[in-house]
Image (cartoon, rainbow, N blue to C red; front, side):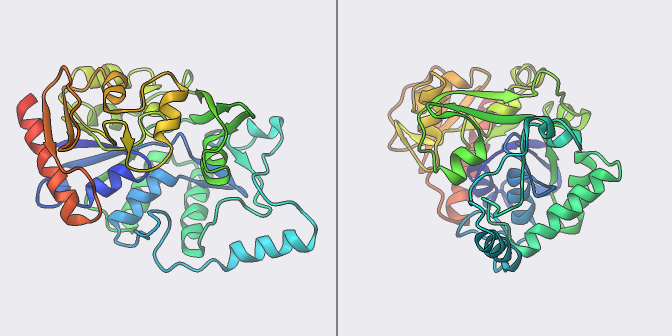
Length: 330
């Protein structure tokens, strides 16, 4: 059995090459839920859904977001209505009181659906409606995720990192904002002064996640701060990683990041934005997979390969390097 930690697009891209290297029936993926939002009353789990749609063969791999070929009629009408009514677009947080009212899983990340700031496709929206309705019927997020995984025909076991709310709040020179506002709406423009995982002190890992962390773990080339950081903020997560073999794939080539706001966020929380910084952030990692062109010297075993992933063939190459690294430390 092997467990992958997934957030953003890095690990889903890596999983594109897993078949043939890692048996899907013996693979668990634990997905970040720190950047979830409740938008217009519906719980959106972006990192869970990227893995869900990828495993179901419907992911839009041009954007690595949403369902391929999805229509956006509802999104378009929401913006038309807002414009006709003279309502400003952009993130519209519900009131502070509303942030902790309603369903507990939505705490600290509740947005109005008026002129929604995240484009949600019509089929994609059906997933969020189903998820939210099943939660309101009393199921846990883990149970709902497994139900949706069955509907999409996933061969892997997909788990949310917790059934409790943890919200990634980015503190910037313009004030605090949810990660989705910082990244989707502001495109990582404000300067980062810190990152808070709100609710982590009250959240716990599920038994399913703790069991998965007893197997060898692969940390994909995801953002160390906002994709993996929310998981590490949970009370027992990092301790479990220290007790099991862990291989991490660097999302950097020395100080050049492949994609996303990882560099800005790493610097904002006090790490060097580089492979060396990732190694410092992951003291629990027993070995690393780094790029051939990355000359960083680490104090742990390193397997080098071309780590750029532009398709399944690239992903399979990196997965083989991960397997080699796991053999070194197990």
